[in-house]
Length: 216
Image 1 (cartoon, rainbow, N blue to C red):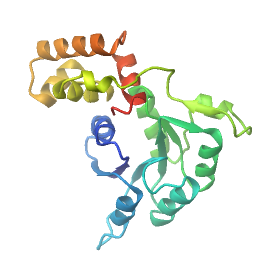
Image 2 (cartoon, one colour):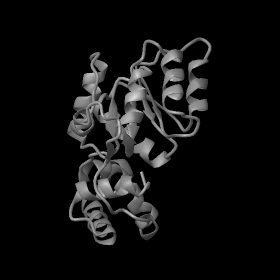
Image 3 (tube, rainbow, N blue to C red):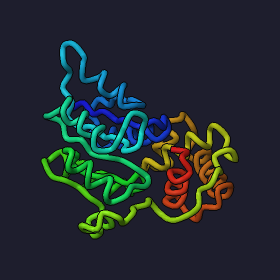
Image 4 (cartoon, rainbow, N blue to C red):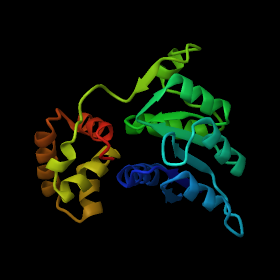
C-alpha cells in the first residue's frame, strides 16, 4: 500500500507517518510539502499506484476546492482525505464537493485516527461530529481543541521536540525509546520535562497544544 502525506510542516508529516506505520505496517509512506510536489508524484513514469492521499487543506498551492479537485483528477482511484488544525464548514463542504472523502482534524486521538483511515480505505467518508453537526449552515468553524499553545516550541530542546512528535503520534514511552535509541526511564524524564515546560496536564493535552502551536 502506498500513501502520500502532503503537508508543509515536516514534523507533523513525521507524526502522521509514525501513526500510519503502526496502523498499516506494510504501507510505504511518501511525504511531500506542497501541491506541486504532490502532483509531481502523479507524473512518475511508469505511474506508481497510490492507495490513499492525506492532504493539508491549506498547504502551499492549495486553493481549497480547486486544489482538492486537481489531486482527485490526478489520482482518480485513490481516496483523498483532508487534514487541518482549523477549517470552516464551508471550506470542507467545498472540498468534499470537489471529491475529498473526509476531514481529519490534526489533533484527533490515535484510536479515532485509525477508525477514520479504515473507514476511508473501505470506501466510506469520515467527518468529525462537530463538522457533521454544522449541517448546511456552512459558516460554523471547526478548531482542533481550545486556546493555548503559543510559541512554546522555543522552550524545548531538539531531543524534547523529537519525543513530543512521537508522543503526539500515540507512541508509548517504550516505543519512543526504541525509535530514538533511548532508555525508557530517559523518555519518562523527557516527557515530564515537556509537560512542565509547556504547562500541559497530560500527554493528550501536550499533543493538542503542539499541533495548535504549529510545532507538528
